[in-house]
Amino acid sequence: MRATPGDQLVQHGRVVGQHDKVGEIVEVLGREGNPPYRVRFTDGHEGLCSPGPDTEIRHRAEEPR
Image (tube, rainbow, N blue to C red; front, side, top):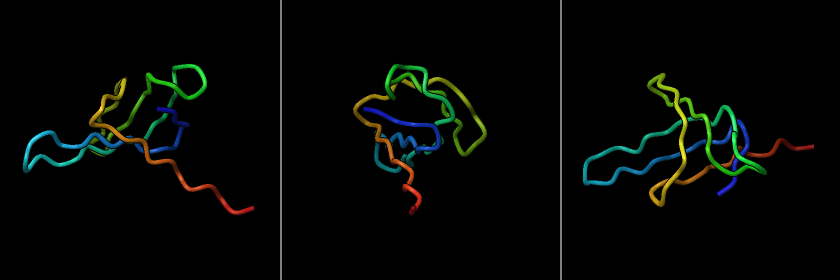
């Protein structure tokens, strides 16, 4: 799993009815885009995250040249 600042980190809900938790990766602390990541979630919470199997990275769209 690799990311860059500005990508979204999505933690999928583990039980029925639990919503996904979405945040923006603000800092990559691992080498070459690897975890851990500093993530700012939509509720304002910020923390370190080492994603598990219930997590996906949504890469920001590249800007046209």
